[in-house]
Amino acid sequence: MPKRRAGRRPGVETWLLLAVILLIGLVIFTRWFAHPRAVGVDVYFVRYDPVHHTGALAAVRRPAPPGPLEARLTAAMRGLLAGPSPEERRAGIASEIPAGTGLRGVRVAPGTVTVDLTSTFGRGGGSTSMLARVWQVVYTATQSPDAPAVQITLDGRRVEALGGEGVMIGAPLERRAVPPSF
Image (cartoon, rainbow, N blue to C red; front, side, top):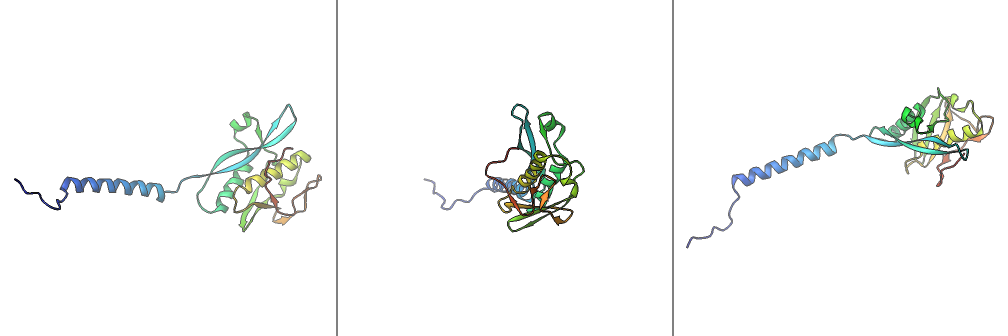
């Protein structure tokens, strides 16, 4: 009878197979974790209901760089100020933010985002337009639980009320549990 060999060692084929599996795993791991992936942000525009004559916020997804919250919110605000795409416009999505409004900066502090816009933001439109544009900024800037409130400033200064309608923006504004209609 042949004797059994105790502790039989794996052959060269087994070692090669293990090496290939480890190499594939390393490549997958590196591609998944080492290469930054695009992150999306929500940008809030307005959709008007022609039957009921009301408007509501409408979220659309935009690409944003991975990284700090400030960079992602800056990308979101730039997307907001750029306005809806032609396809979104055809779908009935609009913006109440006046053309020519510029972004001077986004700063994130514990609990509050400060969005500094040019004074063009406060020009033109009636009360519906003023409310809609403020809520567009509020919802776009407060999409992270790390910053649940936004302070809107114009040309680097805190302004108590926006426009002749007196939409109050002098204190940080928080996202409502139920988005407003206007």
